[in-house]
Length: 328
Image 1: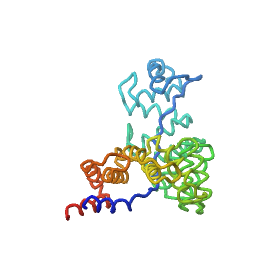
Image 2: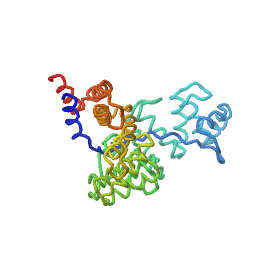
Image 3: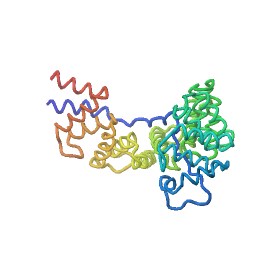
Image 4: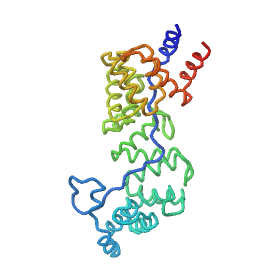
């Protein structure tokens, strides 16, 4: 009877969860600046091809692209010993010459105190310089500073202004952030219909968190017509990119047969993927599946192991089940 009691307690607790907000700052990968197309090579390969000696000569002749790329070599320690101080010097020269990407990189160094003394005010200054040249990353980071009141006076309206400008350029993370302005009514009048359109724009560009969020909206009928099939579709797209909450949510729909054909075995596979990323909801759901033998061979030891994993994260339902076990 002990197993049955646990299963009944757990079964009533499985429910989809909302997608997490995006991180506070955008850590963008630097862009290689080099004349002509760079075909079939990733950033590291391109950097490997750049000669520090040649770049140093060109940078000394005020070649802005060379200054930027030389800074990248020092920042990444490619072909030279990694040195953020030297990287900051060359980023500064390119930034002062008006290069928006160098301005973003210099802002990032000030933001994180790499090669320069940490200064939110100077980070905001350089992000603004880039933003005023329509650099979407500069816009996003400056918007975050206004949102958080870092280096500038906090102002949610101005933050959303910058997110909107970058969103209109087509940057997916900006589209997500501007959608949140509309969703929560922070810096903009609340408008779930408009928010859903911006979440959709980001999701269609492959942003996994936006896809997970869109799944939430279709499941709940917020800003869009309630549509379990669309919810399952967007959860699956995000899940396939490794987004743990989407993996859990898609697993719930598969387990219950909502918006997708019921498939308990597939549900367990998605729960396990999310559980291995420390998603407590998924760990709890996986424990339930092993206890009841739903979609997997029943295994009490494995179930208890996943319950303990969830409990270590202070997940209340898992803690409650383990406490009940100890009492019984």
